[in-house]
Image (cartoon, rainbow, N blue to C red; front, side, top):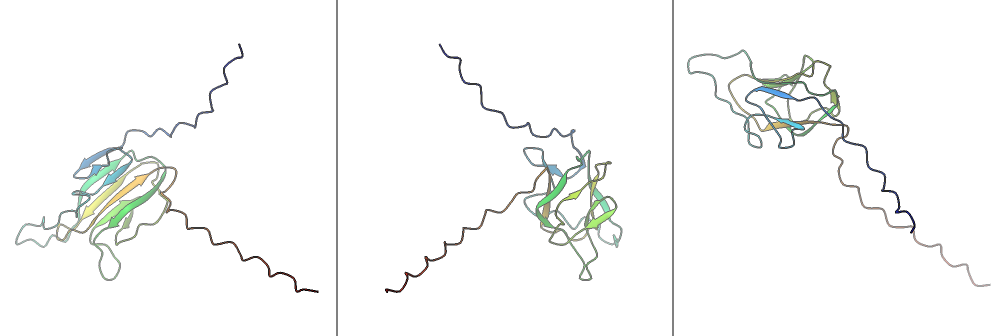
Length: 157
């Protein structure tokens, strides 16, 4: 009898990441590939400042460590920002604070693999989810344009 056909080639295994850890109030997505602000998918908490205090200093409410050196992307990003563009609250990566409603695409965390979430203890905002991986989710492709119309028939002789 003929030999059975060889098995189809397998796809390469997904990259293996070191275990990512969180200290504080942030959480992970069920698959462990995303970190989330406290309360996600709801807003993160505000009003943590005791009555009678000014609470102008920010507080680190969570720190995510051992994040792999892979591009980050946000599935949602809404972190309290001042009118002048500076941050009340921030996601700090490599010493740079990110806030507002958009997150730059494909930021790679430095080799220390550390992300901090800092809040001013006053007002919360919509929250965030940052994921790491070799690719960012792509929007669905646009429909193909219709083919061009056929050329007109040649004129009769």
